Image (cartoon, rainbow, N blue to C red):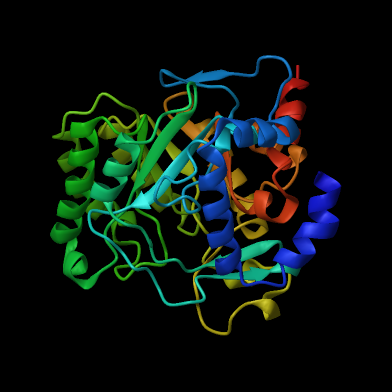
Length: 350
């Protein structure tokens, strides 16, 4: 099946726009997830069936240490098919307090020679109320962890000032906790493709946001999605604020905004058209994971994401200090067999 993907299906898909391919895969995955026979069929080819590699992190047990990163399944449509692809969980979203149409097309652009996607979605999602309604009526696959990434609504009304943005986060966080939807929550402060930019990567503003969220009763792990293009001093300042506000961990990290980090920068759009996924994020995220682990020890759970295309890439993330990993671009470029291969490599690490 991996051979067929690389040599038959991928050449066809990569002639289509990535936005179209994403829509097709979302529809196919949601449909396949509804029926046990199709879930078993996908599992026959792609599900890990080796020795136990489950991992318990912050009280949540993941059957495998691989999650689908936020940004692919914004509205929670794939929760029933992903376990058949060797994922131990997924991070839905990012969702926002209100419906977001997102940015104009194209929302994704392939940079094939760079093993990267230019991501310009602009937080396109149906909003927190729609997500709650959907997941309330979607049967859970036992043992599959569902995280929810929360961002600020990408519309002018929510971006008038920092206080409006804080209220927007609080609205979503309150509703999710009140309904019990989601096994953990991620506060996404580092989306580079929104109307307001990365407002809350400013430590002074982050120090206003997190105490407001702490006022809301929450019995589930809360993580902070970190940027990777800020100076280490600013990064540490955000980590210290996360520590002070009792967040359980961090996700390192988000998209790379620096087109100069591409191996072939001439392939990129002439003007900024979104953050870079995939290979341009790999070294930056690994360095920040390692430095965070060295400075804070076991204080934070670290979920590592960015540029995982091979089992060796995944093992490098773990070696840097990640407890769990997330991916998207690797699955797009390498196919749905990648997660099983990573699990097999992980199971042999001892």
